[in-house]
Image 1 (cartoon, rainbow, N blue to C red):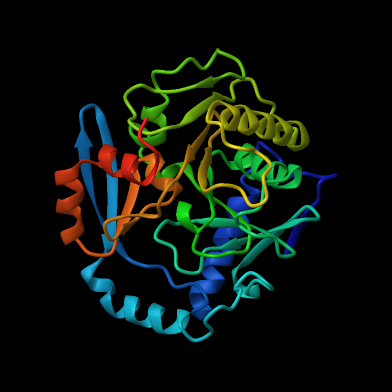
Image 2: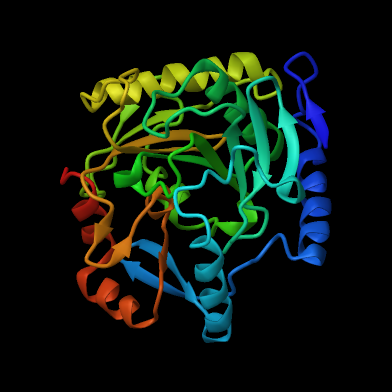
Length: 302
């Protein structure tokens, strides 16, 4: 396992982390440690916005039953303490480790996990933001955080998440939600009137991603600014439920009031235009309600 130390950060111009992830994926697939969930997808549009909806493929029904049986063997167990060696990609400084999502629906879906237990509802720390900045700075993509079970977190041990650009459509979701905002507005909170839920964007334009310590501090300041605009305490313990999303261009915070719309669970990726359902019949209900209304229902109406 390779270690990325704070004194020698992951190069913002390299693909080292993705290369390590790819190697770990190949090895974990060979041993059965990694168990991807095969999905199909559809595109829902609402106005000028579009949403990708994934569902478990009919080809994966046996996989789904197998995954359920495995996950039920040790109820209440913490899969991150310690993380499964075959899924471990790298140490990230002194406080975090990067591991593969054991049951991914997205390739190279990485988890940035604290090496000692911290609650998922605890406030994010300077070390958390630095770890997130290290990965986003080096690889781009989208980092996100589900602040508690109401916000879609499936594990109580603190973990940020990351998915590559290739997993998200470039013309919808997070990019489209922020397209009408001013990237040159500095570190002020902005909102998009077309999104009917409470939210706050902060531009990250001009950030020096090759300096993870400075970039992490900028992310932390942007998060505090967004929380202030939403009357959300940025350092409470526990934090009220919320979702955080961050790309190289924007940081977004969305307060949450419930995990599910009907029987559809929504996590932070919903606010990046990506939804997941268990069965294709749920897609028609999403289409009839409209994705914007669904996201407003699990957040707070704007």
